[in-house]
Length: 256
Image (cartoon, rainbow, N blue to C red; front, top):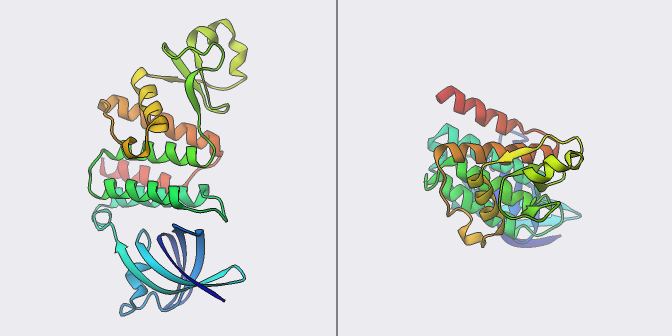
C-alpha cells in the first residue's frame, strides 16, 4: 500500500452509507482519482467539508492495486460564493461533469485543474459574466482534450480575414467565398456562421497565454452568440449531452 499527498478538487460525491462517501477527485499530480472517504459525512469529521463537492483540498490518500482511500483532507478553497447562488452553483456542477468527461485516465491533471480553479474563482466572485466564463472553460477544455478547432484561416484558401463559418464536425473554418464556389466542402455539415467578434473571441481563447484567456469583452448580443456557438461545437464534437448543463439551462429559464 502506497501513501501520497496531493491537492485536488472534488468533482463528484456519492454516499455509500450513513457515514461514508465515495469521491472523484481531480488531483494535481495523479490526475483523476476515485476513492473511499470513511466517516466523511459525519459533521465532526475533518473530512466532511474538505471532501464535499467542488471543494479544493489537500488530500492524503492510500493506494493499493488501483484502489484509493482518503486518509485525511484539509480544505484549501470552498468557493462559498457559488453556494449562495443556485444558478452559478448549477453551472459549476456542469464544469465538474465536463471535466470528468474530458480528463483522460492515468494522466496528470495540472492543466485541467488550473483551468477549472480559475473558472470557479471568477464564477464565485462574479468577476466576469457567466456566459463568458462558460465559453472560455468549454473551449479551453476541448483544446486540452484534443478537440481544438483550427481557427487560423479558411481550410481551403487560407484567408485570415473576411466572413467565415465553422464546420463543427471537421473543426475547421471555411470562408463564405469558398463555400459558394465549392459547396461540396461542407460535406453534409450544417455550417455555423461566425460573427467577426465571435471569431475574434474564440481565437483569443484558444491562442492567448492562459493568463489572458478571460481578458476580452463582447456586447451582450456577441456574448450570447459566442456561448451558443461554443456549446453547439462542444455537443457535436463530443456527440453527447450533459444532464448538469440541461439543469443549468432550466435554472436560467426559471429565474430569468
